[in-house]
Picture (cartoon, rainbow, N blue to C red):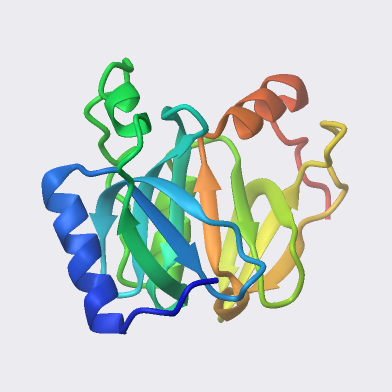
Length: 189
């Protein structure tokens, strides 16, 4: 990974991208964290919201990234930004009112925009946990998970809020999973 940029420079570049609707590439810590490409559509004290793009400049849902984990932001000068401008989703806007000043607020408001939310905890292991948000209580998130085979777990699983480094909604993968899995079964505790 290239040298990291100061937090002040990272924030300045995110603000500039937000104001100009420029396609950016966001490199994150730790080293194994996936890069996020897209357009900044929201910026808070703790989180940034990106209208994510995939190869070719096509839109692929929304990703919230913890700002303190951003190592570098750079403008993408490839053709992909021009392709994005030809897509029906242009100009990109947030999927709703997403609160980006706290983790709890971000998760609650982002999850409200989509049937499924995916969360990552890159510092523990590289994985994406997908499901419906059930509850947030005392620093923990309960997620009723759906498996990769589109079947639902029997009970929600709990995750520490402070361990979550990335959240996403509306990607092609999550949209397909939603179509096959359907609504979560009613809980019987």
